[in-house]
Image (cartoon, rainbow, N blue to C red; front, side, top):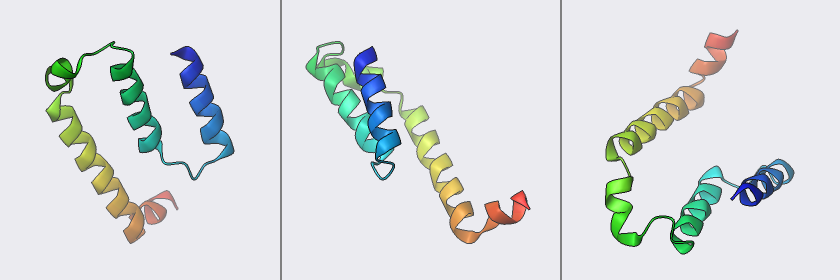
Length: 75
């Protein structure tokens, strides 16, 4: 697992256009493939409140960035 994390960080630093969500999705696939979490347990392992919070937070930050609010605040 450590080797995977280090290799993904290296790939991300050399190819910054690689989306972070694709690396995270591949990591989740590896976890299921290695049977660290079974497919039946996925529903109980994923906390939907955290997922919804992160979606909301990333949406708000993206809107603030697109509108120029973050640039105005940083000046």
